Length: 158
Length: 180
Image (tube, each protein chain N blue to C red):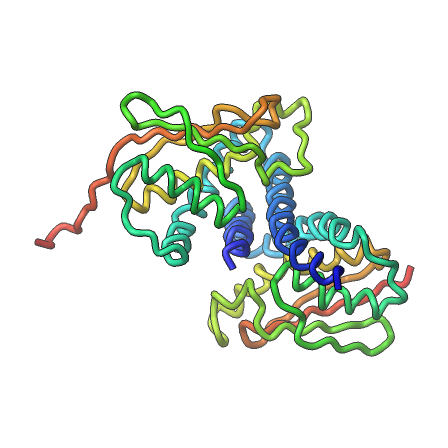
């Protein structure tokens, strides 16, 4: 869809910019990932406010996660999360078998070490969205075979 | 269900909001990194250029538009096809120079600046400068050197947003030395 393209191009360019302007090479990797994640957080907060303007309150955590997997993911990536698993104790794993931001990059193990850069923004997006729905969390991502990836959400009990 | 149909029209708008919000986060980060607005403007232009050189291929693949015969046709394609495709708006093409090498794109509303206000200490920031870079980069890949700048900006108090595009020259394709 043509309206996905601007965001994807902008996202890739942002990652290039953050990495290019970092002073050191390898040692700054963590800082850059954090910067991207923080940007995603702000965007996620704003986006979820717009998206849930007219919807009813969510019954519980699981409802919130289901919303993220269906409506939020569809809005941002034009597809739903393929698999949601939970241990019912605050840990949720969202699996996307064909993650839009990685599908153009590789279909296997090539460039696997570059993948975390491209997931940081989305982790922040999810964390920001959850935060404005009243759920404090830590979101991480892992990739073993592109373009499938798993986002792990750890709910923080305040 | 009426709720369903709300969702489909909303999702198109939401996607442009995702882009708008992401762009806002980017500009905020740039303002933090660089002390003065000129640097930010330059950086936005550079990033836009990098996006433009890739976007043109995406555009040509999706639209299967052939080569434009002249600058007027280029202007129409940019306004009516490209802007519509990627940003969902159709700017109007006006203010042609007598020589036919300069024109303006008038945007009634600029999706990039939804929810945006410029604070007083950033009065020289050209917030949407990325667009200039994108247009410049994309046209360079189709052998046109152009100069793109903002003539009017709603964020700085004008009524409309006006992008002025000037044709500089046709870029000759350089064959590597040694080819016939």
